[in-house]
Image (cartoon, rainbow, N blue to C red):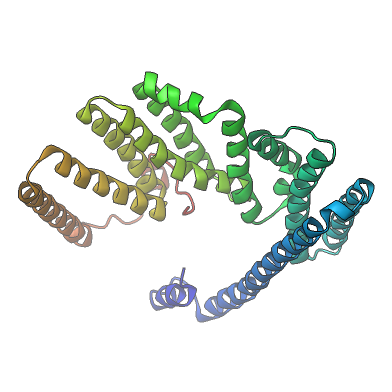
Length: 324
């Protein structure tokens, strides 16, 4: 959000005073600086960790197993102690850097132990083990980065452990039921994520949005009937769009409208064999949308304003939630 532009508009409409605007801009300017430094530190930690791994890998055969285990354990202990030290001193930026390093070291330690003791560790089990052991670390973070990394790690472990073929089998055998059930679960996650600012829950909600669209595509691909698949997708996208609109989640609403538009465009090319016929119907649909939206904007600008309306009388399906 452009806070300067937004606060200028609020000052112009007497919603806030210039003094309040100055306080808000000072706060936002202070808040933005650590993010740039934090991003560079995360990149530095990642490069440092990869450098250590590459160096050890080059001399792997010359290093005794005991030294490898001791080195990995020492690095983990130092990371935990350092993070705790910065936490007690309330250096939040350095705490986030330490948590990211602990997260990486846990993953490296799992691979190290599996290699030294010849433990058969498939990718699914390895990812799942990493996700379980690092879950508490992720919850301590106040940023979404670790959570955004953790969610696909956990899902990859679950799918790899249970086999992706089993999940796709559900789409093949019962595409309608599988699509509706999975989409319903993801809609619930999206709704819950919109009610909180907790980084982990919001990261889950972000991934749930992408998985929601993916489930619809998998469900349509498995449907025998073109129209059945279309109406299931259109209906579920409509539910998500209504929720996003009523809850004030603008970006989610715009993304959903984009996917609905793409789906309608694909439908025209699927139904009409002629490219010209499909083009005509696309043009007609676009004209209707432009006309309808133009009328809606005109009506919204000329609607009567009811002053002093009691808050309890306003009908809302969902309470307003922050953008996601």
